[in-house]
Length: 369
Image 1 (cartoon, one colour):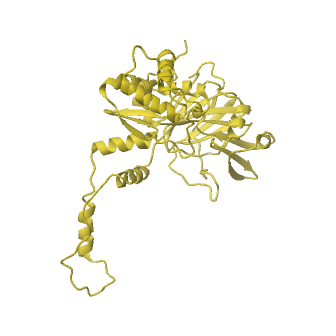
Image 2 (cartoon, helix red, strand yellow):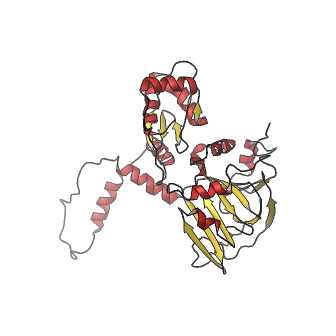
Image 3 (tube, one colour):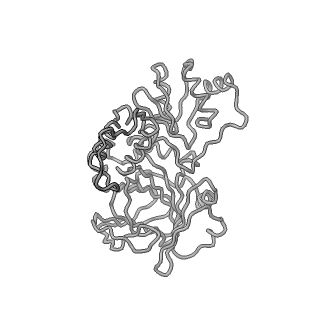
């Protein structure tokens, strides 16, 4: 039986001692780990329009960055120092979901994606830092990782990537297949391939406060209804007609203070925000959908699972699927929470009518299969 991804460390101890605090190297975190996909399959993914991919090259002491989709033949002809990075591999490779389940000790609401990178000997993306938590799991080949807790975040000027100008490594390790390095946010690091190398980056989103505020205000603007219009029956003659008066500023300040929200607003906003598909993600409804009766008969025998691109979260009396909010009635809770936690469910006994109606709606939308 394969040991836990954290080695001898329990999830509780890891969260207490390392999560968002300090790096952790875990030797043989995933014993026998090879690759979920080959270099050729990764290149094939990077040729697709629906896949986000990047090519980083370093030539004549200059960094360059290109965005996919790419042509496979062009990538196969590359020489020198380069790296191919493919985002959201978990949307396209079913086995990737099995890997991500190893990290279920961290809430799904924090998961961003599985990025897979390939680089030939000496390849990488340069010394940099990320604003999110990441687990770097080594696949085929080897990679040297250098890290630093440095405060200097000066970047190389005019570079298309956020490359650190003054990187001063404090620690260095050579990772082999199955080894894993955890890095908290803003920890400088530099990975250098030793021979052909595949690295799996499990990233956990950490939205900025500015982004959260911006998105929340956009959420509120579609839901707030404040009656009344601006009025100033006490208006006086102004010495300067172009001046915005103190009185007007005070009146508008009073109006803006009426813009209030409560925890339920935050709950619903987070559910939508955290499950909203990225702009490049689309779902494919079934071409020849089953009737509802045939659909229910099928899933009662073989179960159901989320589409690889779907995100399902819940909070109290609500469940959130791909940016949409649904009421979580008591008789639906057990099954839908299990589906959210495990991304699949095999039913035991009859399926509640409300659950059946919702699952069929999701099936027609392409959210579940």
